[in-house]
Length: 506
Image (cartoon, rainbow, N blue to C red):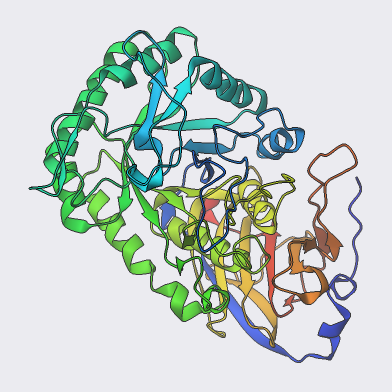
């Protein structure tokens, strides 16, 4: 498809013509990068929740949990394929209640049911060989990169005296699953042990002992494989002392990735949620956590940091916010912020399921955040550049070396609902780069100027599936490079600058 070179004024809403724009200069430090991400930085999760998982008098999971999810759905498959290698993490709150009916060790493996006595309100559930084969088949068809969360509570007993789980992890069930996986030639990029069991649930030293046992299993079962899977752990809300003790006790060559979870927007029923996702001062608060995780990981150079799960608002997300356009303010800001603090991967809760899914739980139609994630994945490269500006705090600015192309790509988020911006980009080495290639701009706005719309516009056109249920083309508008970048209120812009001279990107 030929991309027309048109005036940017024709792309933005006509309402913006009457607004006065604030002049802003964004400065990019281009000699060296400040951090690096993984090639598959964008990640999404699939969870185990049954349809009767309910919060705040609503049950938003439908058949999106892994026991019920239609893995043959064409939109699901096409949505994953569009990334050309989407990292998918399988896990969540119920992963430590999943038994694997693989091998001969497990005789009784029952379906998950509601139970007042069960953890998280449910009994144990059963992953059969047939279902595991179906999950891997989806991976093979779509090119997904798989991380699987193992049950870390099996074999332990809860001690009311100690108020925690005690005893060693029972390794046989996980070993049977992994052995079957290897024997079938299935590709699992990463195995993660447990979900949010830190603190009072399991001690750090016991957890280190258990993850060391997992390492021995992987070393033995993958001894003839040319590719060794990574071990992820512990998948918790970050606690500095616990993480430090855990990584120190497990030692080198055991834990490849220290995963932690972020739900910095609070509960899904918070009436202030709509304001939090648009408040830069509130969003800044989580930066300290990312910095502390980065510092901890630096002390243990054999490991790296991932956000293993983040849905913004916990308990399935916010009913009127988490699946709408405005949530991309929070989501893209988190991607930009975590990459600055040397996190290699950011796993969004969820790909589908709850109110915070990238896909609609019932129709599978992509929500706005899906397109935000896809544009990041296609445009933002691994090398992160220092980026500052002299404008309003409601402007967020991030830049990376462009992915698989020359130059850099900027992400600009205008959280103001009233101020337009004229943005000029300054290279601290070369303010006026030679060349003159047209700027490639991707302007994201909400349908009908309603930030709580489920429909996102790209350069003025609604992003909707094609007649064949494929993801639509995401084409930029080409703009005269001598003009400033014009950003309307409540909008997001990715900008590719192909002539930008950045030694860090050479």
